[in-house]
Length: 324
Image (cartoon, rainbow, N blue to C red; front, side, top):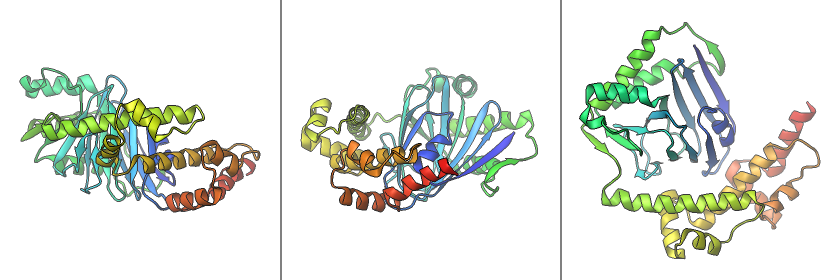
């Protein structure tokens, strides 16, 4: 078994470091990005510890037949896991397979999760408490349990985040370790004092807002991929929402206005294109105008404010890798 720890200089690299889950990660908070992703593959499970110094937005869909058990190691008002705002330290989240994840994590907040076979988790859970697990969950659930700290300590202890960057050999773990880890997870869930499925009036209101933002985000993504920057009018038409309703949904879900979110997403797309440059024919002007940035001086200032460097620096670094 191998612990793999990567030092990351970009949010897209944080997504790429977790190839087992299709993820998109966009940087929302301003400043130079620094992060790490440490993982341990036991064969039947993958334990992952993430941290970054800037607010990021993560989206993706969990593969069918897999599930995650995850925790935030600290609290922050800007935290969000789907429609669960301000996750608590004593909460363990279970996300079933074939379900979208939508997470907003501020800088300085560590995340730890386990990716494992869903039926294996369900089988063990039903042995401990068959009535509660008769039906496999179809949506995100939050388990309030006194064992959250112990489970987090066990997971981070396995990963040993102090290991140096790179692929670090370590003494092999016995097959029993994986079984004991699964047992620890199951006991932590079985000792939950409360399980939140997000079906109270407050949660349902947030879910509606989150769903509206999801529709808007997918429309924006599709439009940008087609080479067109959508207008707010078009986004309102696509979501069936008034300007005020759309504004509320984005404020509630993203703590941003729709206009600010659209601009940040375009800046992230620009950065990804510049980082992926493979030819000297690629220019900042071409990439920026293609994403609807026509005032290049203003674009460069916004880019530098968000990412801590100018777009020309990003492009030059990408091109230097080709010529090296």
